[in-house]
Amino acid sequence: MNLWITLQIAWKSLFANKMRSILTMLGIIIGVAAVIIMVSLSQGATAGITERIAGMGSNLLMVRPGGNFGPVRGTSTTKLTYEDAQAISRLPMVKAVAPEASSQVTVTAGSNTWSTSVSGTVPQLQMIKDWSTSQGGFFSDNDVERGALVAVLGQTVVENLFPNGINNLNSDIRINGLTFTVVGVLSSKGAGGTGSDQDDTIYIPLTTAQQRFLGSTSVRVINVQATSEQALTTLKETITSLLRQRHRLASSTENDFQIQDMAEVLSTIEDTTKIMTFLLGGIAGISLLVGGIGIMNIMLVSVTERTREIGIRMAVGATTRAILTQFLIEALLLSVLGGLIGVAIGWGGTRILSMLSNLRMELVPWIIAMSLGFSLMVGLFFGYYPARKAANSNPIDALRFE
Image 1 (tube, rainbow, N blue to C red):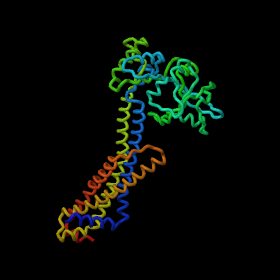
Image 2: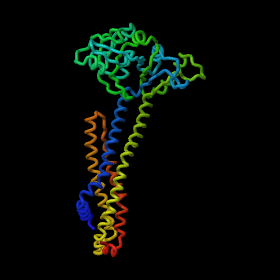
Image 3: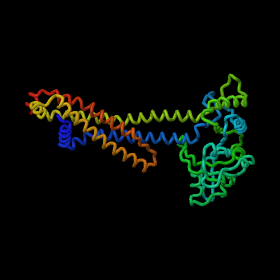
């Protein structure tokens, strides 16, 4: 039988029972739309996290206090100091070093009060993180040396302390009762790699933070930027050797610090998010299987209802192959139409969710191709048994069927 004629017969058969056909396609529609939306959400989250971590620099090492010993990981009493950071800055293959020490504070400006974190650091942090300022600039090395009371604000802090959009440069703010002068405002950076708000921080000279708020010379982390990504492995070993020597650790003693390679962190997160993408896609794909079972069920009902029609067609010369093709095409039409409608709903749903929730969603072509291909396979797999049953009908029994 001509394929075009077969398609026309299949189309008329499906539209003879419009509501039943729509309900049958519903499982495929929901499955395809769910796969597209869920995978797009996962892809968007992956891209966002990857960009934020990559923005910190793939040639970045982060040295933190604490080793692998003690009752809790990282509970070493040994601390990293500003002097450790200065020693690291003199190593070969080091481009820049920026230690950080942070504390939670309450800050006021006029009648406005805000609880945030203050991070004591050095000017090199701006270069390492590639941050820009929307107003003013970062404090200087001279400010660090003399422990100046100057501050650089993140955008979230500005919005809460200066809600009327006043020019806050050279304004005075009080941090835990101490008066600081605002010398700069950082451009918005958004959420960090862990999802925290990077704009909800005030940056002040490291020496000021240590003397005024921490009462200690220790630092929370030392950011080390290597001259190249290829130098990371060697530099990691060199820093390890240097710090072990500075902390006077015996050869049998474990490190009392940890060195985190951002390239490794990025690779780990990418692997994790790939697993999450397949997991979310798999969960949504279950709807497609349910839709396939619906197609099989309706096609079996259709074969029973049209038994006499099958007998007549066989009696006038229709071959087993022609009957098989006829019902298989009907099943494929149901799945393909459902798949196309599901793609449209998934695409629209992705756009709407992205606008309403400010979630980042990445709709990539392979998601659509995969969803359509899977819906086609579902139609083929679940439509074959009913089609085979119709093709194997006995013509005489089919003609006698009431």
